[in-house]
Each structure stands twice: as structure tokens, then as C-alpha cells.
Image (cartoon, rainbow, N blue to C red; front, side, top):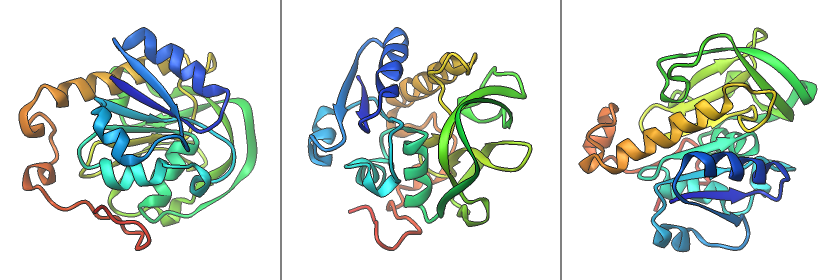
Length: 222
């Protein structure tokens, strides 16, 4: 089951519809109606953090989900969800140089990332955001996997754990390969779930069973 955490955004149900066409089962829950413990009990195969209004710290349970479950459950953050991931690990979320609401951009992508497998570069994406992760503050534990020509951060992935974020909207018609990206994420999660002890995941730290910590001293895995 794929769990979609809805950050009170109309785009969440576009995500729900598209993911539902790919995955066998998807469940959507709003960000202030469930605890991390309850989410863990649901035992989702993967978690998607939806877009939403406001700042990452206002996104209900999302940041706690990242810090407490991100070491063992694949997480994809979209727009606000992406910003929540970046902020949890120490990046600064600031105002974007220009408002991008319903605008299309071509971005450079790292095709070695599981998210961008078999997607041509540059990738056309839909952008709906006024905030962005500040490039200079991205911590070493996060790898930038997509950016604009102006070097604005468009996607990240954790160097150790199965955590991914995209600033753009894969569910939008303005992102032609968005469905492929979501399918890549779901396939990645499925590969992990059928591989004992995450052995199919190619990051060594998963095998070392390191404790999950962040560079943000306010938030640590317990």
C-alpha cells in the first residue's frame, strides 16, 4: 500500500489519481489526522508527502515522518513535501527568485537517480511554488539530482536512506514524464520491499544499520 499524506492541497488528489493508476493500493490521509505510530502500524510500502500551502514546519506530521520512518520506508516529497525533506536535514527554505505558479520549465536531471531512470534530459516540469531550498545550505547528506539552468534545486535524494524530494509537480499535465517518475519511485519501493534487509538498495549505510540522524538538531530519529 502507498500512503499519501495530504497537506491540505487540491493537487493531492491529482497525485492520488495518478498513483492509483500505477500502484495496486493507495490510501490518503490528511497531515493532522494521524500519528507516526499509526502510520508505522499501517506498514505502507512507501509514503508520498503531497504539495501544500505554507512552510514545511506547518505540514503536520510530515517532518516527523521523515525523521522517524525515513530510514526504513521509501519517502517521496512533492513541492512542500520536498521542502520538508530539505529542511529536516538542515537546508534553509527561502523565497524563490521569482514566483512559479503554473509555469513550465526544462530542468537538468541526474539520470542515474532511481527517480529519473529512462527519462530524457532536459525534463519538462510544472512548477507551482514561491519557496525553494537554498542551494548553499543543502547538506552533504542530500544529493542534488535536478536543477534549473539558474541552479535552483529541483530534486534531491538522501545519500544513505530511501528519501527523495522533487520541487516540481509530477502529477501535472505540464510534466509529461511525471507518471514515469512516479512509476519509478513505486518500482523502487517494490524492489526494496521484496529484497530482504534492503539488500537491493545500493547504499552501504543501510547494510551497516546506522542510527537515523539529521543535521538539524531539533529533529532526530528516536
